[in-house]
Length: 367
Image 1 (cartoon, rainbow, N blue to C red):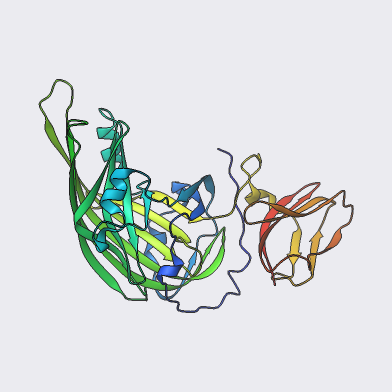
Image 2 (image 1 turned 90 degrees about the vertical axis):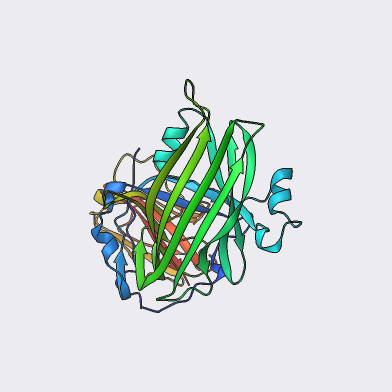
């Protein structure tokens, strides 16, 4: 996969402010968010140690490997509606459904899927007071079976503030018979601590943030029919941690790093950060390209944006965060280019500048 590295412009001038996270800062039903999946080798355990008040987390070096769009869908089957719809008890009425993409341990999926195709989803209830996982959905060989937890797992209490902590248990069991000769049950202990506040920088930008550390001890157990063996329970215990950096109005963590603990060693398993659409077709790494003499100022900008370089500018393109082009300039043969962006609406944009020798992509703020 060809990758790019996007520099960030705001890290050195951003002010520290302690924030509060509320339910309105989370995704709701029908929402989607675009994220980049980072290279595991870019992050080490030392990056997870820094925390506390007035923290300065610099992850501007993250390199996107590929991108995913997370969707929160509505209930879409009769069984789901019966279990988690408006006729269910209030505490079991789901706000949305999401795939268990990054939390199901790979040891579970790799072992079980050798014998049967299994997919797990989460049923989420979001209220002004909390976000809870009220059950799992188990799909085996195309057949879906929702499972309401007998003990509801609480992921967040609102408002989220520095030094807040929570503990909860989640338990549930589902029998897929007679559609498939299998059962599934899960037991989880979930602790979380808001252990830091400060400023975080990623390729997406710089933000005031709270850091939340989750630790989940879980046992996934499957009773499945394995060829040439009697019906057998397979129990797989795992200990995972998730480090999340949240800010206001972004609907998802700015950065999430997942780890798994094996024999006391914490191993990074997943790096995911909110992002804009990236172009992976470029053959060059922009970290190298940005060593050229190209400067963009002022930033934030009100009207005129100055672009200074030591060569000939071939092309300038400005897009919104969804990748839609809003301005384009070609065949520019000047060392100093001043472009008027006063007609653009206030917000964040991406500017791509290509010269005879260099190319950069930077995020700008239109005031």
